[in-house]
Image (tube, rainbow over all chains, first blue to last red; front, side, top):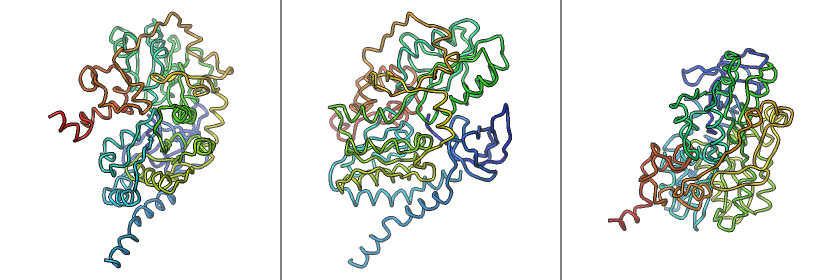
Length: 84
Length: 372
């Protein structure tokens, strides 16, 4: 139940005085409460849990993590080749 | 899907597996706290591809599983009352109470509805002013801001016909309880990423200090889980105990401050019973006194609850990491997702349901050979 899905904010508006918006999940658009991400803007990514944006997704940090994963073991491989 | 598919890349996963194999020299027991992570691990076979020295112990992070039987029985009693619309997340409907579940009560005529967001329940209350709408507010810290917003909004709108049956639970006191248990074999924790998106991870710093146990904030996709495991193993092998954040794209140290502000207004910390585990002090939230009027337990004053657990279900041991689901004699026999004896066989985050869904009927290949 703690699953959160990343999606892209498409539209921001207010309903009953609460900040709401439309978020796109790879082609499926859902209404999401944006009250807890007051700084998020259209085009930003967020993580959505039970219809609520719980945090802004830090895209630079995501790319950095992927870069670190891709580099993992590369040094050992190269060293292995040298010593082998 | 962007930021999902990249973190499921099997070639990069192989790199992480290789790195974990390279650094592992001794046996280590690591608990993934969250049931969402348990499902990711079992679905992707991560536990089977790790070096045999590493054991993953499945934690109690399944909110549906730990919701106390007494609260389930109260939910059933409230849902059965005439004029009530009882709203719940879908996971809750098959969770066995003492003598029935919400599906059964619904089939007997109660108006039980599955909602996607707690705000849907508020909308139902607006649209049905002559009915009492009750929302079953369960979950960990991840779900609490959503439930809090529903109560807050109902109060703003002056809705007299909305209330919430609250059974919220908190992760840090559960980690403390596990570490205090004399049976615990846990040497490191993968903390639940989205709980930390809301609460931050500063709360875990004292736990790392007190128990000298590494805690790694970890996400849910296969690469995230592997990175969490890799960092935990690296610390264990080096004899270190630190708090690390392996899910930085979604988690900041301070967490989500607007959400925390709402939580502080709507909820207050309370002792909470965990199904199968028992009462853990200061381990849950109830509605704060300001929102007492919205408390379904007060509004419906349900008394005369006599709980009766299944005599053969061992989900309590599963939730504490003392028993693997397929070590339970009832697993896959008397107890299946269609005929669950305990909540761990029902929820999409329950460890028993994960083992059943992904065909883990035998403990290991060695056990299977023994059985032959």
